[in-house]
Image (cartoon, rainbow, N blue to C red; front, side):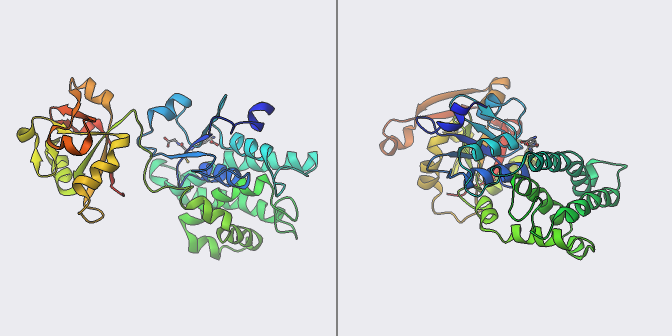
Length: 341
Ligand SMILES: N[C@@H](CCC(=O)N[C@@H](CS)C(=O)NCC(=O)O)C(=O)O
């Protein structure tokens, strides 16, 4: 992380943030980017991703495939803390990082290490006991609570971990404590010996900073559409039937693959217009957007041709659309999400 890249990223390249709305690592990165004055659609491009279908651009930027990832003009930050520090180095209006003593900075580091290490481990096992057979949720809940009690004691009269104002450590830990509470809110709220920590979390839950991080434009409900993928709008019952049959053979609304000879697809930038033109009259929830991986089509020896949309050439001005010659194998569909215009 160089001073140059932190100081001048906006001149001719907007930072791109790959994010996932519910991910606590991504939430803390969004909190810091927002306080540093970045705003999706203005000086940052936000790409909401589904962890079930990570776009190729994300994996090219960072092969480890976690979010958040911030792509800058000359570097890629693929750790949430690095993103927070980068943001705060460029602008830190409330002193999350600035104005603390070396001892306090070291304290922040060890709080964050305890959160990202043992606390996160217990949180995952408490939250998803099915994924960790032989590790009772109650044992992990208790181990998590032991750490929370330590943090509770650290919250002094000032109400924050290091004093009378929030620091990087507070903002870095809070999304994870929020998630711990969400596993069993009533149990968390009734927990004795955690009064200071319950108040600390309560302030965060009611804060405009968190509200912003969880709403558009910081948290989109629809995944970003990659130019590297292909798309198809499907009627929900027809997709459900295909899942039962093991194969999808609809071409477009009201027409089958047999009738047309190919399945109509769209590129990322064509979906919106196709949806408005052919499906605009249908109620919310009736249409699904299928995200199709062209590499999986190629692996199944299926041909995609880019051709003018003959049936409605008048409306598309000769624009080329992808056409799939053959039925759509279910394994090539990476994601089926409700279509939201
Ligand atoms: N150390 C990383 C951890 C990020 C991380 O694990 N994010 C999760 C989502 S909350 C993820 O992307 N997991 C990958 C997956 O589920 O496929 C950071 O701080 O950014």
